[in-house]
Image (cartoon, rainbow, N blue to C red; front, side, top):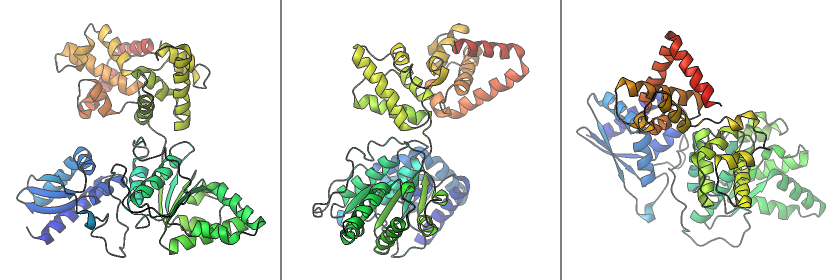
Length: 464
C-alpha cells in the first residue's frame, strides 16, 4: 500500500477514535506513534520507548484495531515496535514544521534522563530535588496533567506555552512543577530554570524598588529559559507588581522561553488579576488536577509505606484512603500519624493501632465502619456456607456463582473500587463480568423481597 494510503488510513482511524474517546490524553499516545507500513491485515507502528508501547497495547489497542478493521473492511491487527532513533537525529517532533498550525502533542513518559550537555553557569533554580516524575503517583485525576507536563519537559517552549496547572490545594501542582524543572535540568543542563512563587516575585520586586536594583531584578527574571511560578492567585493587586509581571511574561514569551504557572483556580476566575494577564494565560494550555480517587489515594499510601520499608496492611491502607479524601497533604498526615504511633509503641501497623492513631483526626464516625472487599468476601462466604476461595475460583455452579455475584454487587456498592479492580479481587475476572453481576443482583433485588432483606442484613453486619 502506498504511503498516501497509509497516511489516509491512519488519519481516518484517528478521526474515528476522536469521535469515541473522552478527554485529550489519548491523543498524546497516538501522536507518540508513527505508522510505518500497512501490509495485508497488519498496520505496523513505531514508538520510541517501551513505556509508550505498553501503554498503547494496554489501554488503546483493542479500540484502535476495531476502528482500523471498520475502515479497511476486514479484520486488522496492529503491530507496535520500539525503534529508537540515532542520538544525533533524536527530535521530539521529527515531522513537525517550523510553525505548525496546532502544537504537537508531548512524547510519552520516559524515565528521568541523563545529562546530555555541559551545564550552564552556576544558577540557583530553587527547585526541590525530591519532586520528580518518577515518584509522582498517577491516576485518573492527574493523568492528563502528568502527560502534558512530560511533553513540556521534553521540549520546552515547543508547544503548550504557557502551561497553566490549577487545582485545589494539596493535589500535586507543586510536585509537577518541580518535576518539570528537574527533568529539564537533567535533559537540557545548559538551560537556566527558575522556580518561584508569586509572593516571592512580589517581595523581590518591592526590595528592588526600595534598593534601586530594578535592573538586576529584571535580569534575573527575563534572562532565563524556563520560568515556573507557583500560586499565581497571590500576585498582589498592586499596579506596579502586575505591570512588572506582565512585561516579564511578554519578554519571555517573545524570546520563546517556557512559562509554567500554577493556581488554585482557572484563569477566568482570577478576579484579582488584570484582564491582560489572564488573557495571556488563556492563550496557553489549561489543565485541571482533580481530587485523587480511592485507587490513587491507596497507591500513594502504598508508595509511602514502601519508601519507609514499612509493612502497611491492605485494610489499613483502605481505612485511610476511604476516610481521607480532601487532598494528598492530609493523606500524608494520616499516614505519618499511624507510622509515628507504631514506632512510638514499638508495634506493627494493624487496624486496631491505626484506629487508635487516627481517633483524634476529623474523620467522622466512618473510621470504625470502613468496609473492605476482604470483609465482604468473608461474610458472604460464611453466610452462604462456601469458602472465600470459591468466590475467586472459576466454578459456575449456582450455589457458588450467585453468592459471588452478591459479593461483587456489595463490593461495588460499599467500596470505591473500580470495576476492573473488583474483577481482580474475584479471581481476575473481566470488568464486564462484574458489571453483569451487579446488574443482575440489582434486578433480582427489585423483584425479590427476600433477597432485598438478605442484602440489607449483610450490609448491616458489615457496618457493625
